[in-house]
Image: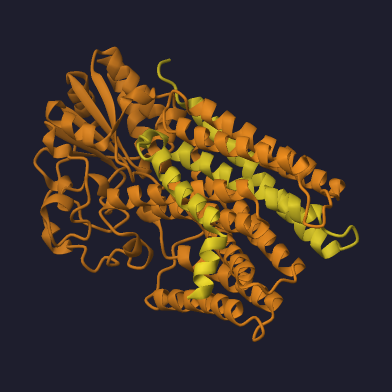
Length: 102
Length: 464
């Protein structure tokens, strides 16, 4: 019990942040019309490519001769970039088709 | 100073994500929203490369490796996104979702392998990142293969038990390795989790198919966000945490919307499949007769109607008939007929599939009417044309409690004056459920390939 309370007190801000972000995520897309379900999903998919930051940090701090870590990191950067670039580009293409009138 | 700048860039990035997502929920602002979020992402990446420092105060190095990765990823990603056919969009979205999941799994592994901490919080977050990331990766790749028609559904009776067992093993390894790091070395646990979670991802998506696809896609999208959030916790990175949670939460909402549109719970979609045809009520159909329509009848009916509604389904995508469908709509409008499309939320194989498909064919989006509003318009509609939809218009969902889809909201086409169903054959829909709509007195069936038939209708309308 003591460890739980101390964990809570130490990470209080983080816990508040997480809870607020969950509600924000729900709120932001609550009234999305079904016309936009696919672009919204694809756009948020691109945003989940934010893990690219982690791959840059991981490879950026690897020792320059640690080729195992470097290879893994390289792979992660490629995959993350694919997610970000592909995600935003695909979303952009889809949205370009949504027109009101001809 | 550099820490301040980094956090500043991250805060701006987070705000662009939030505003971008918000703008994505309205057709008029969606494009700006997408650009905004993309700009925020670039800013955050720049900030990371320039200002990030680890605990020892070292800046980011290995620029050559990073640049090479960025160039390869950008080149391939952009090429794929631009080259892919509009009709292949669902699988493309799935694919990119999978690469994000793989990235999360790898960075969580790297964090685990290069860190020497045995702090329970650190270990748990790393294990969760690996597990959720790997499931997202393999699950999305299977979904990609299925949407692309390369992988068939695999459904066996013992599959749900195998899946449950795997899930228990995954959770078990995480729990043991976190609580008593001395029993199992963290690297070993990491490798096992990576392997078993990947297998679990494959087996968990394998039995789910067809009409349930939109739910799985939305769920996998949510998981990729959650995996990213674990990465954020592991690396103490605020933008990964916030971005990941935003995506995770919005994905959960979207999954819930999809489930609601099918009147099923998430658990039911994931574990229970439709009764495999066992309850498919074949008895009721028996020797009922269907009335067949000809192209000529249909063209005349539509041309002299005041209001025509088109209900598209996955069959429209399969037949690649969206362009000719738009032509059909235009020829009717040229004759002064009011035409609208009624879109069921789970029509197709991903959330909003029909909207994207029809948008590709230049159908203006105000003509795409959501289910509830369309149902209100039905009584004033003269002819309903159903193109490749089946379960979403099955009246058994309303009046037959023994039907597996009983309770699912449907497009009430029988409220209209008459119904034309375009079908290739008398085969039942994905769920294998008999559709009483076909035998109803208001209904006529127009057999043939949707693309061909619509083309013939367009020609026929010109001669009228």
